[in-house]
Amino acid sequence: MTQSRNLQRLQKRLLGDVGRAIGDYKMIEDGDTVLVCVSGGKDSYTLLSLLMTLQQRAPVKFRLIAMNLDQKQPGFPADILPAYFKSIGVDFRIEEQDTYSIVKEKIPEGKTTCSLCSRLRRGVIYRVAKELGCNKIALGHHRDDIVHTLFLNLLFAAKLKAMPPKLVTDDGAHIVIRPLAYASEADIAAFARGMEFPIIPCNLCGSQSNLQRQKIREMMADWDRRYPGRTEAVFTALQNVVPSHLADPALYDFAGLVAGTVPAAGEGDEVFDLPELPPLSDPRLAFRVDS
Ligand code: SF4
Image (tube, rainbow, N blue to C red; front, side, top):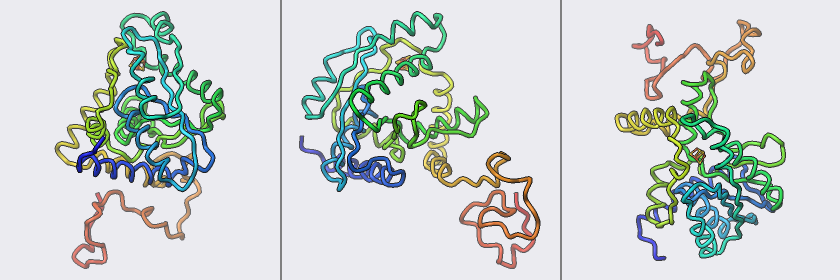
């Protein structure tokens, strides 16, 4: 396919995002076999496409295996992904597992099915990773997903916790990586449109989308509309944590604080200052009180 200039620019930016995330978190190393989970949505198609491009260009050698879990939702077009994987020449595995029926049987009508569904899905993915000898599992979550998860935990679970770019699975057997951690959803959506990926609609299971997540999406979309760049700012904050200015004694030794030591930069008595404020050494600000 001849790519338009815009699409090439977009791909370059996304490849840069993915390359930096991989480098910053050492996501992929020489000799890795990476299982790339593809659901048929815009994010996972983009992930696979970018990883395949990087595979050709990167100095490290790694193997990619695409995987789709056919959960047997009614109406799932089972032929689309195998045909797509063949057309792009990637090794792949289609795993058929009727998690849909299990979820329908176990969860009462009207209740949210997503948490059981994703737990079952995770189990299948980890098993397939083992069977195929994959030491890494790549998921298509992006920067917006990570920020939304932070607010979900903050506002609905009273936890300061997001979604990490890299983690070890509960059984300790695999590393899960999120190479799109630095990529914006808007760029991914535009790239997926430009590439004309054969998108499979994500409402086949008939489940209502998670209402709390939907509320957070709307909240962040509103903030981004009124003050552009907020999602990016929140993500950057996740890489810029100051434990001494939170309130978790397990994270910071508040009990052991003693006078007579000078705190590290950013750990003093400033609570919030916009970065562009003039420095305090300015004599006109000598009596300024922090907010
Ligand atoms: S939306 Fe449907 S397929 Fe997706 S996690 Fe929820 S129940 Fe499972």
